[in-house]
Length: 185
Picture 1 (cartoon, rainbow, N blue to C red):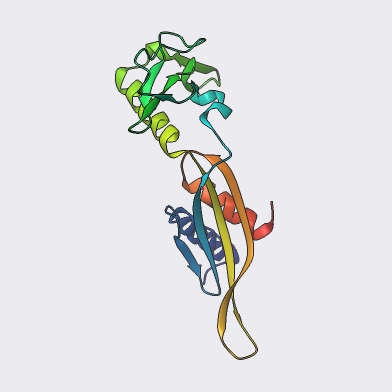
Picture 2: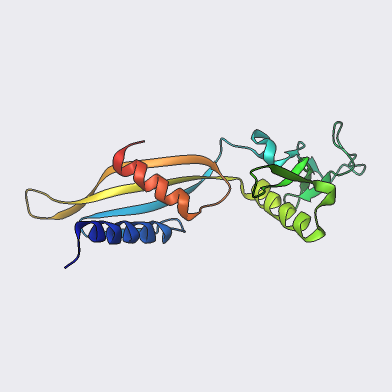
């Protein structure tokens, strides 16, 4: 016979696994009489310029401008990124690109110019996606199955939690949103 602790541990593992399965907009984690639904929307309130960690971008420039000079305050590291068929922006990479903490707890940062070319290319691709697609507004909506006075089943929202300014959806985020939707933030 399993102990209460073993049962609780298995339930917690199932909950974590269920939350980790929430990766795309509309994904549902069904829990008998409750369900959690992941919602992902474009976040119109955040810009890459809101975060120092992503560098900064210039104003949008149309291709009609033949000179396309580098904007004031942008160094030789700045890169033109095509936004759409009509224009581009300049992106100035941040100074401390790839930070890490060693075993002693000391923090180290690689300078952008010292990063391997493949790291620079992958970071530029990530930033390009942020510029083109924007940040995400991510939410988990918790619903409960109820039966009305006529005996019909319905789903009723009983909690939700949202966070904006996300550049991706990851398992720890969905689990935290689920916990906040369930227990309050």
